[in-house]
Image (cartoon, rainbow, N blue to C red; front, side):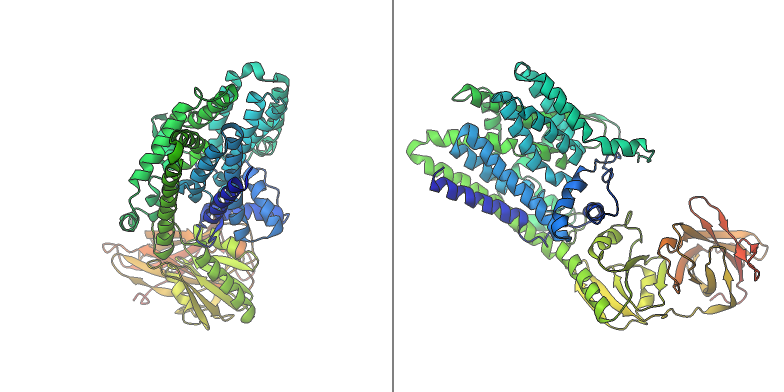
Length: 635
C-alpha cells in the first residue's frame, strides 16, 4: 500500500469515526437503550447472567448475545457513553472491513469508493450512533462475508467454521439475521462442491451450542409474550426498505410527523445524489457475478450479490411486521457493488478519472451535509414521534441530582414522572440507568406523591402528573435542566424529611390493613362535571414484592354502589419505613344518582384480586374496607 492510498484510507476512517462516535450526547436514549444498558450492567456487576435478551418487536425473546457484547465496554467504564461509543467503534471497524474486503478482490479504487460511501451513508451513520442490538450487526456481518469468501472462493476450508459461528452471532444479535441464514444456505448450495461438509457439520454444531442459554431459558418454563393483531402476507416492503437505507432516503422521518416539513425546509435537496447512488448500486449489482478480470472476482461478486438480495427476498413473505432496521444485515453489500461499478466507470475516463472522483466525493459531502443538518435540527427543537430528547440533557439532570444528593445530605432521589416501573415506563427506565450509582425510587406522579422520613432530592419529569404539585410547597433548593424548546424542562428540588402535607380530615386513629398500611386521612371529594377527585393519605408498611391496588366505592344513602375507581398503589417493593403517600383517584359522580353518603376504600392484591382486610385493635381482621361518611364534607 502506497502512502497516498494509506492517507486516503485514514481520511475515510477518520470521517467514519467522527460521524459515528462524535457528539455522543446527541444520541437517543429511550426505553430500548435503557433496558439494554440495564441488562449489560447487571451482568458486569454480577447481579445476574442473562440467558435471554430483551423481548423483540415480534414477541419472541431475543438471544442474550447483544447483552454479552455490550457488557464488554462496561467492564472498562460503567457509563452510558461507553456503550454508545462502543457501537460507533464497531461500525467504524466495519468500514475498515469493507475496505479490506473490496481491496482484496477488486483493487484500491473500488475499495476506497465502497468504504467512502459506507462511511457517509446517512442511515448507516444513524444506525451506528446509539445503544441498539441491531446496530452491532455490520461488524459481524463483515466477518460473515469475509469468512465465506475465504472458505468458498479461496478454498480455505477451515474458514467455514468462522462463517457459521459468525452467522450464529448475527442471528443472536437480532432475529432479522435469519435473512443471512437464507443467504448462507444459497451460498453453500452454489459452492457445494467446495464445501468440506464434515467441517460444516462441526461449525453447525458449534453454532447451535451458542444458542443453549436461550433454549435453557425457554425450557425452564418462562412465559413468552405473544404478538397479536398482524396477519401475514407478501409484499415488497423489504426491497423498499433496503433501497431506502441504501441511498439515505427519508431520514427526515427522524424529525417526527409533526415537524419533518420544517426540517425539509432547512435541508438541501440532494435528489441528484440519490439518483447517482441508485445508479451505482443497481449498476454494481448487475455487474457482480458475471463480469470481472478473473474467476475469483466473478465468484466473490456472486457471493456479494447473494448477500445483498437474499435478506429482502427472504422477507417478501412475512408473518410479522417488517421494519427498515431489519436490513442492516445488507450493509455494506450495496456499497461494495457501487464501489466496484464506480471504479470501473472511473477507469474508463482515462485522463478524466479525477472528475469521477470529484463527483463521488461531492456526493459524499452532500450526504454528510444532510446528516449534519438533521443532527442540528433534532438537537435544537422538540421532534414528537421522532428523535428523542438528546442523551446529554437527560444525563445533565441525572448528574445534577447526584451532586445535589451529596451537597444537601439527602438520602435518595425520587424520580417523579409518568409511571414508576422501569420495566414498563420509559421515563423510569431511562433514569434507572442514569441514576444507577445513587439510591433512587420511582413515583407515578399522576396518582401518587411520596414523602419520605428523610430528606430527598426530587427529579420531576416535564409533565410529572397532578400529584407532583404537592412537592412544590415544602421544596427548598430548586434547579432545572432545559430540554429542547417545546419539551419543557427537568426540575430538581430538595424535599425535607417528614414534609408530607396534612389531610383535610385525619382519622382519630389510623385504620391499619393487614399488609401494614395505615390509612391516615383524606380530603373531601370535589365534584365537578360528573366526577370528583378523591385523595387519601396513608403510611406504607413493610416492603414486599407485591402489587397492591386501592378500590374506592362511592355509596348512596341506600347503601348502593354509585360508582367505583380503582388504581395501583405506590408499589410495595419501594416502600420504606416512615413513608407517607398521598394517592389521587377520580371517581365518577353521576348527577342523576341519589346524593352519595359515603366512600368505601380498601386494598387488594393484583392480579390475584385478594382482599387485604382491615384489622381491629387486637390485630384481627374486622372489615374489608374503611368506610368514610361524607355527610356535609362534600365541597
